[in-house]
Length: 165
Image (cartoon, rainbow, N blue to C red; front, side, top):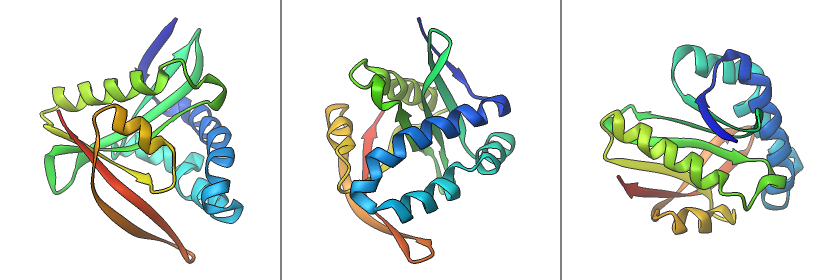
């Protein structure tokens, strides 16, 4: 049985593990091992996840199947416009692709955003990530391109995609 719930501090290790299992095979061909390692530590350290959960800067949803964590999403309102929410992260275990978990998580984030007064959801996706096609199937369109300096000489080269809710 599939269940989605808000993540708590006790879920940080599970979130980190899912990120590790997904990021290496997905992003090494796109950005290389060194940048993947850097970004995992930057965005998915236990301390970073715990801080985001504690200070509420990102809300995490954890998707479980038969009680096992298999995916997560993280979102928040944009600071400059509370009617626009940002999907920061959405990952499902690679061996579970094709089961509709990504769609279920994305729809749950959209519903949460609407319940909190949002009229739009935006996200960043690497310009070479095949997940772009998933988001397009879910009704998202490319708004613009963005290059973000994340330090240590690394950049995120993304599309910013959005969907009116």
